[in-house]
Amino acid sequence: MNVLLLGSGGREHALAWKLSASPLLTRLYASPGNPGIGRVAELVKLDISDHSTIAAFCQQNKIDLVVVGPEAPLVAGIADDLRAWGIRVFGPSKAAARLEGSKGFTKDLCAKFNIPTAAYGRFSDLASAKAYVEKMGAPIVIKADGLAAGKGVTVAMTVDEALAALDACFDGSFGAAGAEVVVEEFLTGEEASFFCLCDGATALPFGTAQDHKRVGDGDTGPNTGGMGAYSPAPVMTPQMTERTMREIIEPTMRGMANIGAPFAGILFAGLMITDQGPKLIEYNTRFGDPECQVLMMRLKDDLLVLLNAAVDGQLAHMSARWSDEAALTVVMAARGYPGTPEKGSVIRGLEQAEGEGVEIFHAGTTINGGALVANGGRVLNVTALGATVGEAQKRAYAALDRIDWPQGFCRRDIGWRAVEREKAGV
View 1 (cartoon, helix red, strand yellow):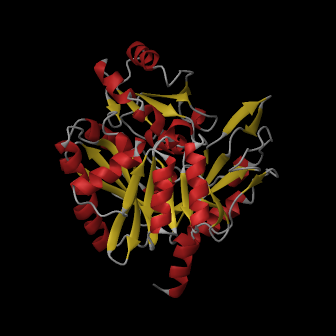
View 2 (spheres, helix red, strand yellow):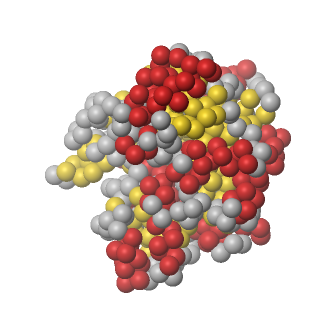
View 3 (tube, one colour):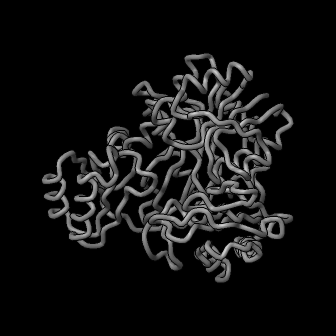
C-alpha cells in the first residue's frame, strides 16, 4: 500500500514510525513532515489546506490511504473532499469532526443523548456569559467554542478570573474560535484520556493515557498542548473502561449515527473520573499529542491493518493487543513556551540518547545549515518503555539528559501520580 500521512508534529512522527513497520506498506509519504518523520517516510511539500492539490497528488502517486494527523484539516472537511475524489481516508467527515470543532455541539449532543458531562451554558454574547458566571460562582471553566490549538480553555478559580477569560474570548484572543463560548461546571476527580478506533458503527477500545497539561512541575503554571504523557492510565480499570464504553462512547456513536453524522476515525475522549463515575470533559477527533506517542510504543498489532479495518467498516471483527509494559514520554520545549518560543537553537546528541526501548519523536524541528534546530514550542518527545511507569520514567529522563540542547526545558515529574501509586502498592 502507498500511504500519505498529513501533519508535522510528534503525533505524526509516532504514526509514521508505527506505519513504517507494516508489511503491508509499499511507500509512505508525509506532508509537510519533519526531519524525524523524514527518517521513515518520503517528505513532500503540499498545502494541506488545498484539498484539490492533495487529491491530485494522491491520484498521481496511487495513494491507497490518507491518514490525517491534525484536527484543523478534519474540521475543514478534508476527509469529505478526498472521498469525493474516490480516495480512501482515515478520519471523520466534517459533520462528525464537529465533536472537536465545536464544544457547544458536543455539549448539546451529550444533553440530547444523556451522556454524562459537566453542567453548562452556551453563549454568543459577553453580557449573558458574564451574568451566568456571576450566578454560578467559581471555580468554573471557560471554553472557546472552536479550535484554539489547546489554548482556549481557562479553569477559573475565581469569578474575576472567569470574567477576564470571557473578555479574552470575545475580544478576539482566539479568533473565530472565541465568537461563542461554553461555560462549564468545574469537575473534581482524576483526568484520563480514552481512545477508540471507530468505523461509523463499531467503537474498538484503543488504549488509555494520562497527560500533563500545565507547563511546570507539580502541575503548575499555564496550560499547554501537553508536556508529557504515560500509558496505560491506572485509573482506567477494566470496570471503568466498561462504564466509559457503555455510558459515554456507545451513546455517542448511536447519537452521531442518529443525526446523520456517523463517526469513523479515532475518537479521543477526555474524561474526568469523578465520585459518580466517568464524565466527558471534551472530545477530540484525532490522536492526542503527546498521548499518541505512548500508545504507538505499546501497540503490538499492525497499525495499518487496524486503520484499514476502520476505513472499511470491519472493526467488529478486529481486536487490538497492547504490551504489558508502560510507556512514558517527556516533552522537551523551547525556552519561551507556551508563550513565544525561541526558534533556531541547535540540538545535538540525539544519537546518544536513543537506544533499546527509547524513541525520540520530533515535534518541532527543522534542518538549518546541516544542523538540527528547534522550530516550534514543543520540540522533542523523549519516549521510553518500562516494566512500570516508574521504570519508563527513569529510562526517559536518562535518555533526555544525554541530549545537548541548553535552550530546551522540560518538566521533571511526568508520571508522578502513577509513580506514587506504584510506590504505595496501589
